[in-house]
Amino acid sequence: MSTAIQFKQPEKTNLLGLNRQEMEAFFTAIGEKAFRASQVMKWIHQLNVSDFAAMSNVSKSLQQQLADIAIIQPLDVMVDQLSSDGTRKWVLRLTDGNCIETVFIPDDERGTLCISSQVGCALDCSFCSTARQGFSRNLSTAEILSQVWQATRLLNEEKRPGRVITNVVFMGMGEPLLNYDNVVKSIDILLDDFAYGLSKRRVTVSTAGVIPAMDRLSERVDVQLAISLHATDDVLRDELVPVNKKYPLKDLVAACHRFMEKRSPRSRLTIEYVMLAGVNDTAQHADALIQLLDGLSVMINLIPFNPFENSGYSTSSNNAVHRFQDKLMQAGMITVIRKTRGEDIDAACGQLVGKVADKSRRQQKFINPRFGMHS
Ligand code: SAH
Image (tube, rainbow, N blue to C red; front, top):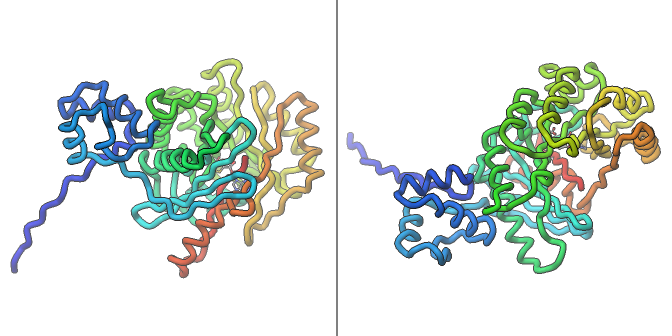
């Protein structure tokens, strides 16, 4: 029997996913000065360059060396859609064939990019269609950053005002705090002045309440945190957000206080509260919410439930949402009702990934990932 000799090509490092520290380590390992890191990061993230030959302040020989051992490889854009309200949505394809969605939501001075951190989700929230898909895998740092890189490039190409990413929210598919390392490294790059240079107030991690990771996050980076609360008692929250069985409300609220102690006194915690008709939207629920959040500096986001097939829930009426908001405001809590955007391109509910996945995996039962793609 003849044994074929196999030469495994060493895998090239994808520089798209390296934070400053890793980029400096990469350059020092090849005998270069650490300052190359900021130079190259600028090319990649600020000038959207993916070809080493275009890096004019890098010598020809280093360009060649980089091309031999490294790559700048974003995910491919599979679908690109523009809504009549200016919302733009992309479906990006991972090398394993899975798809993720990214949405740009312009609003007055703000341009928010909503990004995914995982393929699917393991948390099984009862009102969320991503849960129906189950969990596939974590996104790498490069895959997370690809969403920002491609969005920046494609928005630049539009050459029209108001198409700049000013805010990034981890509110797409997945639970960011269960992909802690890659999410945190992505945040490093989002905040780095040689990359996207976003202010820490403009990057938001949204979590269903993974307490140990909330504590670690507050030690590691200074960013906005949003808590998907949705209920004010453990019985209901166990049902809506099952991770509550592991991290119940009392502990979650204590963790919120700890988190806020680490932040500047002026900052606010975002509380997300999905409005489900007859489930969590009565005056009593509003009172309980006021009590639960007493002493915390918060901004409450009421999210109209985004229905999907067989969800078993319906959206609270406008009246119910406004009554709920009024009650919270009377108690002195800043409360906004989230507008649903990009409905004509299914940007609010992840339908497009559902359709694409449907074609390739017809036999699967659940193919309707949901995204929290609201402004
Ligand atoms: N796993 C993270 C981020 C994911 S989704 C988290 O739980 O926070 C971002 C937001 O969209 C969350 O507040 C989530 O609860 C909410 N959401 C999920 N499904 C929804 C639906 N069908 N309608 C409205 N909001 C939804």
